[in-house]
Length: 235
Image (cartoon, rainbow, N blue to C red; front, side, top):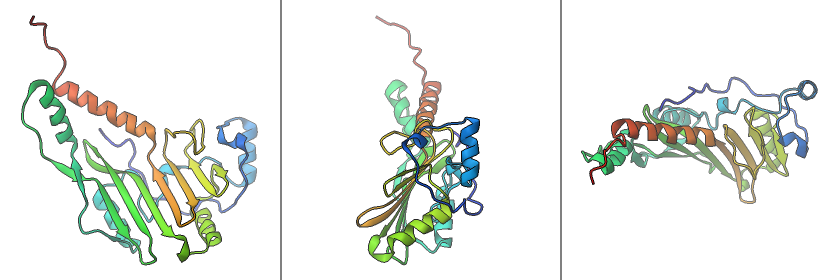
C-alpha cells in the first residue's frame, strides 16, 4: 500500500495564541459564523496535523529519514532498530495457509528509540507497507524535573499553535474534518496530544485509525490477489 501523503515538515510556527475551548468546539463546525470566529481568534481551531513534527520527525517518513532528522535535532538513536515482518513477508505467511509456498523472510524496522541530552526520549513507530516502513507514531517524553511546566506549555503553543480542544492540561490537535476531537473518542485522521503529566511531559503524534483501516484493506486485497478464494467444491 502506498502512503497517501508524503508529509512535508512544518514550515514555521502556527499562531502562538491561546484560548479556552468549550465543549462545543469538540465537534467540527464549518458554518460561515464558525469560520469568522476562527479568523478573529487568529487561525483555525483545526490544524494540518499531518505536517506537524516531533523532534523533526513527521508522519510518513522512512526509518532512514527519521533517524537522520533525529540526529539533526541532537537526539542519539539506538544503534539498531527492532525488526518486524515486511509487507511481502506478511502476505506470504497468509498465502501459505491457503495454497502453500515459501515464506518470505524479509524484515523492516519496527521502531526507533532515541535519547536527548536533557533526559528526553523519542520513540518512532513504523508500519510495514508495500513501499517499506513508514512512520505512523511519534512519542516524546521528558521528565518534568528537567523543565518548568509553564515553559513547556509555552514552547508547545509556539510550535503547534492553538489546540483544537483543551481538556484541562491536555491539548489535543485534530485534523479537519475530524468529527469529534476529544480524548474519549478514537480519531480517524492524524492528531497530536500534548500533556504535562505528573512525572513526564508527553507529546504523541499519531496517524489515526483511517490509515490503519486502509492499510488492513490493502493487505487483504494483496493476499486475495496472490491466493484468491476460488477453489471449487470437491466433495
